[in-house]
Picture: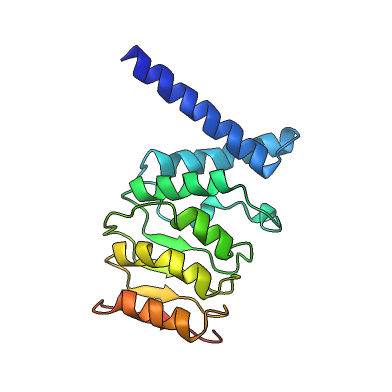
Length: 180
């Protein structure tokens, strides 16, 4: 058991350092922001029932980053896959959510059924049909989605077809593809 605890502490240190470096936190204010951000990441990672929405994981002040650290996004995808309490994946107006982000976050995970996720909001991001292809396994696994919002992206007919096929047979209450 001591080896398990030591391995867990080492993994946590690696995660913490990876996230710290990725977001470029430097001073005392950043340290407090990072602490708040890290608490949210740990809620996701350790399946804390208090975390219901994935939106709070992405620090808004860092949305302007041109590049994302693939390792960070892959880890967030892994944590989401293992979480049983997330009800909402809400990236509305987070312009840094691009095809590459969806590839890293959703494309590297084998998704098991997610029965609690009700809402998926990718409105006004920077997504095309390429990103939608990476997202489809997650959408298929999120069997209880009732709201799917993707307006204001450039997914085209191909992306629309992929999403429509993935959601076929679901009890969808809200579905928005406006200006896609």
